[in-house]
Length: 265
Image (cartoon, rainbow, N blue to C red; front, side):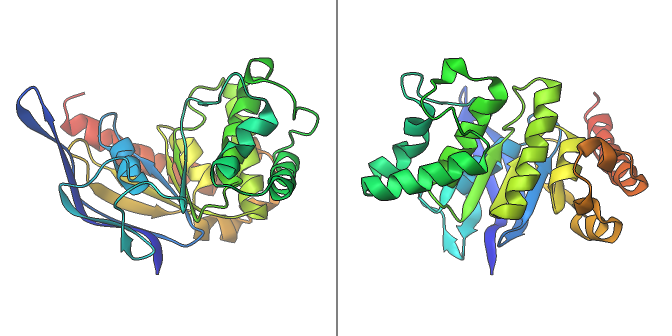
């Protein structure tokens, strides 16, 4: 059974007295522990799809399901990581990560064990007592990801989580996410504007049309990664030099360029 399914999903917003369709007839299935990245022109409805999966918005047509059940509200089975770190500035790294567990009434000893394990996994040892303003952007985003992982969600929804980072930090976080996915895999729906990021991270890349967004095509990256043994490379620059990576990146860029050309941009 697919962990996330979009079945003929449409979403229309009411703005200034007029109906504005954001997405229409979106069909997409993300399997358990699969990493799917979504790319598309600006305003095509990528984030709308993520918000529908999170239960922050509701479709005006079709269904969004998680493990076969329609999404009717946010839930503990899904965790969201946003572009902005959204950390509480008055709480330490430890307390920011532990907040969700505290709200769920998890006993103190278990909270301590789970948060300590995630801090080690995210290479944040020594910063447990630090406040967000004392951390770099990349470290703040690691705290945000740890806060999502510590709740042990089935599904991780990531909305351009590295978009606010500088180029070097973004590369480091991409490598960190690949490492984390190997150690502690989750079902991931990942929204990004970066084709390179999508190809590097994802098992499959879903390309959306211009608004109202539909799934134009789905590009299989995982089988190419296995064939070329991408997993043996530790640095993103080594992967980006591979002929297969360049081919996939070019294919997706051309698909996106067609959408912009049709849109007159």
